[in-house]
Amino acid sequence: MYFFMAKKSLREPDFVSQLAFDEVLKQVEFDLRIKEFVVMEIDRANYIIKPNMPYRSDYFCIFLVQEGSVDIRLDDKSYEVFKGDVIFCPILETFWLNRIAENYKAKYIFFSVDFISQAGFNYKSNNVLKSLSSDPTHIIRNEPDIYRKLNFHLDELKVLNNTEKDNYYFNEMIWHHFSLVIYEIDNYFKKIEKPHSVTHREDELTTSFFQFVQKHFKEEHHVQFYADKLCISRKYLTKVINKTMFKSPRDIIHQVLAVEARLLLKNPNLNINEVALQLKFSDQASFSKFFKKHTGRAPLEYRKDDLY
Image 1 (cartoon, one colour):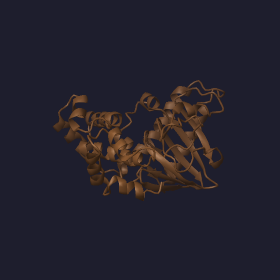
Image 2 (cartoon, rainbow, N blue to C red):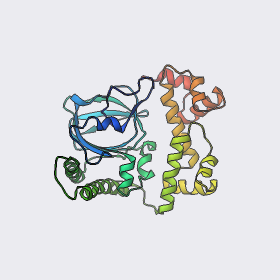
Image 3 (cartoon, rainbow, N blue to C red):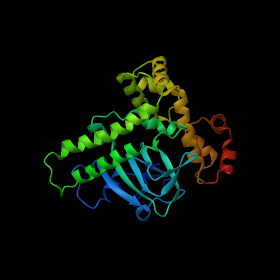
Image 4 (spheres, helix red, strand yellow):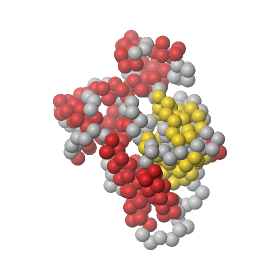
């Protein structure tokens, strides 16, 4: 869902175009006090993402749709967001642009992993893993009070981060407004999530597990590897992830693998055996068996049916 602005310096050889935070900063028209976040308005005229191409960003994004609508695809599901919607976008999700309205206009805040960490937040797995949920709960709809407050905080953050504006307490005020943005969104998600008590240690383990999965899932498909990286037993890791995510670690690893497999199969330059090799399956047969189990279709059938 997830960031619709980039310079043409994206790496062309990659099937998935990588959106780097440095490219966002180059588009700001004034000097920033803190170069780990930026607030800007984007409309159709400066919305440079090309339709029907996969993109992935290395930063977080929140945007408020002010006018019009935009239709985006995450994995194989399409979502349309409209005026008054608030969207929270985790990092490293792969998305496509399907359609953008002529009158589209939205207010965005982009921020790095370092920035949210410096603000005192452990970017929780519950939010980062929204992409693995079939329910797009990272879209906040029909909440005008939340929209109004977030709009106010983003306006304040934009002014405070402009070096041309004098403010002795700019640093403290930036953390204040940014914290309120995160609290508003986190509070909304907490209200709609299943209530269950998760300790700080369990939350940290879940976040670390997800980070390791994102880094190693192509090479390492077994839960034991991740338990070893976290210096805990496989049994304890399974207990924690089942509690925090309502899924087993194995299910999450396989879900990430299946998402990546579908993405790679959309690349016409790769044959099925090359996709299997990239994902470190022992052979094409074992990959095909895995893919059919998780998607209901054989890789070749999926590729033929895909209208990408």
